[in-house]
Length: 370
Image (cartoon, rainbow, N blue to C red; front, side, top):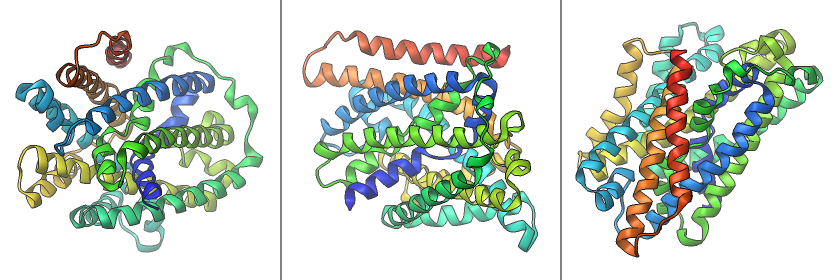
């Protein structure tokens, strides 16, 4: 049972707000371009996360990523890594607040009134409370909500299947060739919660890799399945947040189900990533526990209230820039770990991984400037 709770935590983190940008991305770049990206980026993600696992399992002290960087690369690199990771996690939490509040508004405002900002605050209050309570309460919520998520997705597919048109998958536009990179990397990345999962597992040396590998495979299949449903049924009408574009084809009742699906995916990821950022403040920078919780939860809320509410832009920046830099840091961390624990090993795969992330950052910048 512990293994499946750990898998639920990982999947609840990975399968988040990024899923709602994927059908629109596939519409613009082409379904088969998106498929190739998923195959390649899944391999890259698993490779980098396995490097991180080696460091975690080979280190006695309990850290989060900045702590491991400080131990093997020094205090200056620790500060840099904290800055990068904080940007990534805060960006992700902000994205969950933006779209989670919108989905909650679509679900509840027809019955209770209100506006998206009000429901974002409700989403925030519930999430912040569970983060304050800690991992035990979150793990139970994750397992329940993730099970419910898959039930809703299955019902969603049954209703949408008659409307799927194969012709919707034939589009291809090379102008958007680099569009999928940031969104897909964001959608697959789950490094922040790995130390959390290690603490949950009684024998992490045997099962941690299985949790991560299985989680990436399941997440990739869920994403492709979701793209198949939304793009297949919506076609050119596919909306940026995926759900509203389905209304004409599937009707209001199914759309409401999609909004429920959206609330669940955003909420589960918000919980686990917020807990992880809280422990980065708490463990690695010796911030008082309650103040670490305050910083974790209220910085994204403040950014939202200041007007940062374009969730696709937030996802793209977080995925390509922040997570790309984090990937580079993990590779360099693993190299330093080998040098300290054993001996320096020249591994061309490490340079290849760094090159991929650097190119991804460059392409993302060029794409948005262009």
